[in-house]
Length: 327
Ligand code: CP
Image (cartoon, rainbow, N blue to C red):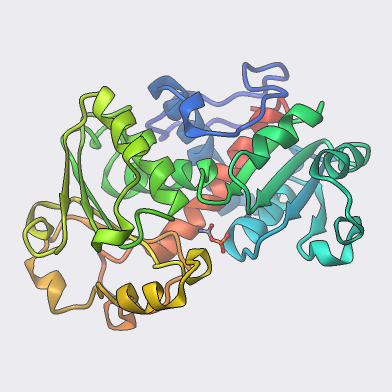
């Protein structure tokens, strides 16, 4: 594996027994700042390799079981692409109704089955804590691809990598990050807020009252002495914002459809409102979107949400290589 001499990150070699070999990735709480620099260094190298050669055989002979109990476009397909870009192969289980899950097979038994055939397992599941249950059952590494309203650690890593790549590695200290929309059910913002505590940032939460960031997450952030503030409107904080992280109001998480109707469309980012934002800032979104960012804003250079998806490929390549002992 060549090393990119232009890389602003740590060097990347062909180690076979790294500290991440065989590890699960379940929560952002596992990571410290040095870990992030390492992961982003590897991801940056992966980006360079994809741009130069497309596909290479770092994980040739390795198999990923991609097990999704909930819908996904980005996470599922980027893990598949990541494995295939690294020369490995994938067992895709995107429709669990066609697997033995529909016969009542438990999650631990499903995991034990898949690890007979695969070297690493990626899991998305509707229940909080499911990834930890899977990891307990498995001997092979389990990567949490979203556990209900709990965490989405690989998304938080790619979000952080996006900020590094777009606004400059090492520049994140001193930034103001504003999270907008459904902060109650949005697992991506739960993970990102926790991960941002590794930096010297200020976090603003803008949401309807019924979709506030959970107290448990705010308490964790407060313990790390990160300034946090809550707002009902965006106007006051948009001019100071360096990263605007927009989220979808998640209809599927509401028990009462009437409550969803009250808050859907509460915030819409469009060229008019973005006139008050800085020129040097980015707008992110984990996607999919359903109206909270107008397509009229898509061509603005600050619209980073499509580039953000591509950064996810490189981060997931890095994570797969790391847990399989090849980075
Ligand atoms: N960002 C994200 O998790 O997207 P998918 O639900 O499409 O995987």
